[in-house]
Every structure is written in structure tokens, then in C-alpha cells.
Image (tube, helix red, strand yellow):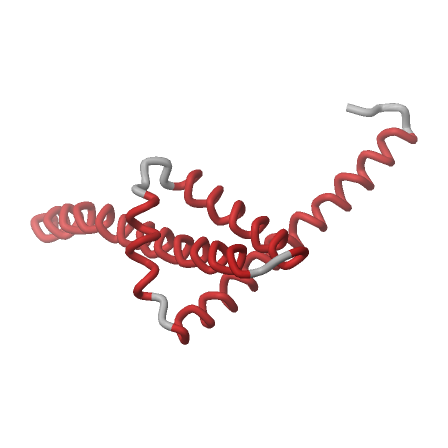
Length: 128
């Protein structure tokens, strides 16, 4: 049994980094697609819609920079553009918009929680 466990464990240890790298690349591709969606939206809109698109654009850029600071960003964007057919673009716009909305709602709730806690602390005389 021992003779069997060691080779299996070694094979698993060798496969895991490859699987993690592929998953990270999928997330990066998804985020690049979201960046492209917001980039093209910002370029084609004006006023409040353009401002909202720039906020999304910066959010996706921050995710990409934070996770993959050495990413060849220009090449990834140029590579993503021809792959975003109209159907894929619309699908990605929905996915990215939903994800950004969920994150925005979480940040809003966190702000309310922090504000309430801060108000309680101030009323108790122990602001930190």
C-alpha cells in the first residue's frame, strides 16, 4: 500500500500547481473581458453613463493589477478584443455588471456597518 501512496501523492503534488495556474488564468481572462466591456462602454457613452463605466474600468484594472502585477496587460486586452463576439460581449457585460453590483452592495453595507460602529464608539467616548 505504501508503495502505491507515495507515487500518487507525488503526481497529485505535481498536478496541483498546474490546475491552480489554469484557474488563475481563467479568472484573469474573465477580468480582462470585464475591463474590455467597461473600456468600450466608457469610450462610447457620455455623462453619467461614462462616469459609471470609468468606475467599473478602474475596479477591473485594480483586480488585475492586484492579482497579476506583471501581466502583459496590453497584449491581453488586444487578444481579448477579437474574441468578444456580440453575444459574448453581451454575456460578459451581464456577468461583469452583476459581479460589480454585488461588490458595490457589499461595500455599501460595510460602510453602513462601520458608520454605525463608529457612531456607537463616539457616543461612548471611545473613538479609535
